[in-house]
Length: 515
Image (cartoon, rainbow, N blue to C red):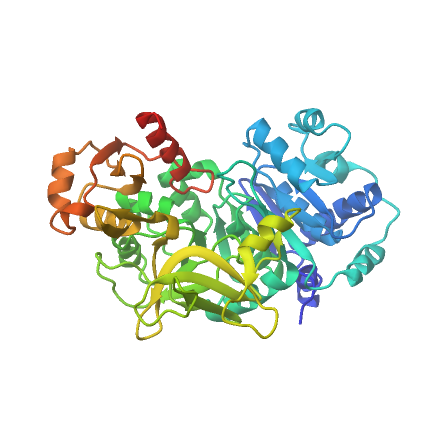
């Protein structure tokens, strides 16, 4: 069994495949021999500057060949990488650095002065290009790798920052064991092999991208860097996917919804695609069905998991047609993961009874970096087990399990409201709007507690009147579930992960009402 993720890269097979392409970034390519050589060189610089193990090292780079080298180098050095968004506002970046307190930031000359002014003397700023062009250090490869003998599988591999809607993001700590366990399951269940050519669209600070890096290391698969700005130009995105003969995509559904709405798969066929995996948010069924019709050769899988779980904890492989009006299930627990659905009395919910999805197993994150108080609140003792310590994570997501054991996502606990005496799931309204109302491409439904009104923010090519929407919705929903306030967008605001920016819309709602 592997203990450290670097063991995959140091496997004998990797040495035999040194000429195999690891990364394609525009016109640049990097083979595995070069990736290992450059990563080890940078790792030696990191060790020479600060001879630590299991310390946080920040990476402040755009998604690129360099960011892949930096992340791999930090792992070779026996430390923990944390990828940062180069578009972070200054104050947010300052807050993250103060919270995580990395000893080093790896960046490029474009950002060195900005970071030095921000960090002062507390954090060492290293320009990756200068480090890679410098003379070799005295440390040998054997000496570098011997440091990893001190790493065990429960040591941290990376830190991923949450969206931080309350101010400072929380740094979720994930271990080598977390990823190795998830990787081995996914290789088996999703038939992932060394032949994957991954169209990597997720930002560097997102867990989907980190999983892609792990596949790159473990299977010597190829990662094609798709610049984040391509999400705004879906036709160009598909052209690059086709050009690079990508056969594996693991995307957040929003971009896939846009592609379906524009009917782009009709004009840009993706004949090489063999795996379409989606996660991170609900994929409207009618848009997923569009993709399946155009890519009948591909495996489609809906994966679910919050950031506090290593990538995902449930899966559903779509093997039959799902009617547009029915949501896509989130499926079954991944191997070595247990899903507990707890009702309001902290007891296991019965079949078809809604409850909070809670997770136990090797997929659980280690907790939040430098924040024992929030860790203790989120990662708690299993209320069903009084006999020995057993930690579960309470996701705050409401689900139910049907008679066949299939898990269905309902929505967030904080998306459940009490309105006009009725308990309503806002996600149910969103599902009907997106899947059953022609002309609406996407939607976000919110509740104004003080005004006791349901707000609908919707995206469509042309504005549709509130009267038209409510009339159509009344065919599917009772009157008490109909939105009373409707706001049109030609394109809903998105956060850096490509999801609908609910925090922005929430603030808009508050500003509009003066609350």
